[in-house]
Figure 1 (cartoon, helix red, strand yellow):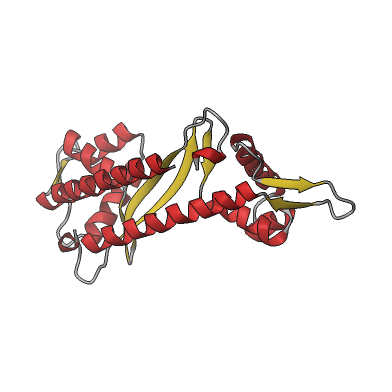
Figure 2 (cartoon, rainbow over the protein chains, first blue to last red; figure 1 turned 90 degrees about the vertical axis):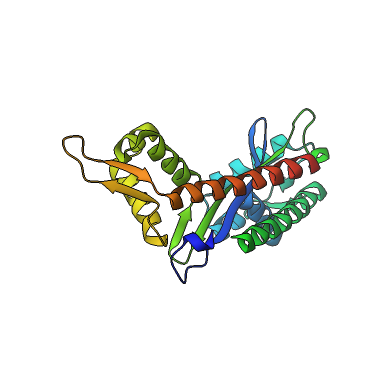
Length: 117
Length: 117
């Protein structure tokens, strides 16, 4: 394709990837980043803040993942003044690992296709 | 990943793909569809209407592709009352063909990754 482009331009193939079930989206880059931030901050509200996402949106995403997963991927603890905390379950960690593997293969595909252009 | 999901749910990998240059997006599903509709209708305005896209938006996309391509991908003819017509150049046809090939390989990648889940 490079020969069809103006001199000096370097085309690259880019893309997005996500996992859907019958009920709609299950996992994508935003949801995985949210899980990672929850794991880092131990709190859904802090994770949402770190991503510039509303608390409601973050909860909706966690609810959607928990509803589709066999075992919850995020576990919340009722708390005192601090509003409790949230941790990833083992299943949540497995989900992140599986997505990262998929993402790595996708990046390799994009590199390979970019080289073909 | 299937074992992490509720019983009865069948996860699938889905995605979007596009081609970027230094100047931003060059080609993606919407632009390719626009080229196909221009080829079909022989007119940018009819192609835009068929896609529910504004005439200005369609022109902006055509301008963006023509500006990045070594040779124009769409050629317009000044016309009379009907406002002229538009045709794809050989380069425009080659672009569609190359994108379709890329898209076919991407679909195969998605199928393969869906089967792995």
